[in-house]
Image 1: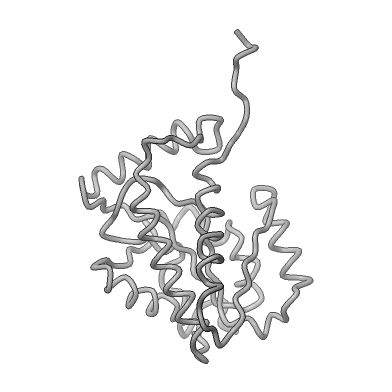
Image 2: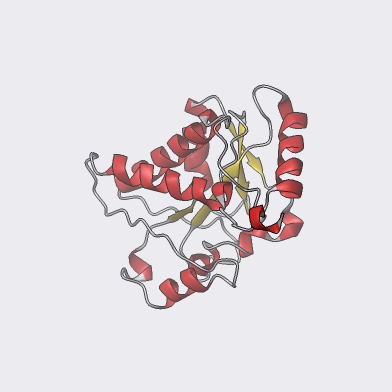
Length: 212
């Protein structure tokens, strides 16, 4: 029986969805007229203490004072379209104002982090950049599902955490509804494109701990 046991941690949602979205954004960005360079960065060993992103932050290919902003794309849940997009560490920088304008075109809104006590803003790869002063946005799937509301979103999240999060069951399923992931990537793409086609420097909100 053990011969058929599956101990492979595929990480289909966390975070192959994020990597797939990032690659799609990179491919599309090649065809755009840009005023700024866009750096696509995939780092390793987040779960071991952000080692990959911390290494880059200490020895970057682009000086930190030349990096306008950053967007962290981690896992994207295949739960279908949502009315909202959750921002982890909500209330940090003017990147949220820009994201809000993009989401308005999708008839959507920003939702604050539902579990700020978990400290997720400090535990993902963007944190290595915030410590250097770079405004970062960490957005994740929403919870208010267009077909089922908040109850459906919470039920999906609870089932994923219990059954698949950091487990061998985090596998690709052909029955996934990818329309919500597509919508989220489109929003983050437009946010990135807007920054790359401008000379704006989004700031931290006054009083933010990383502002200095």
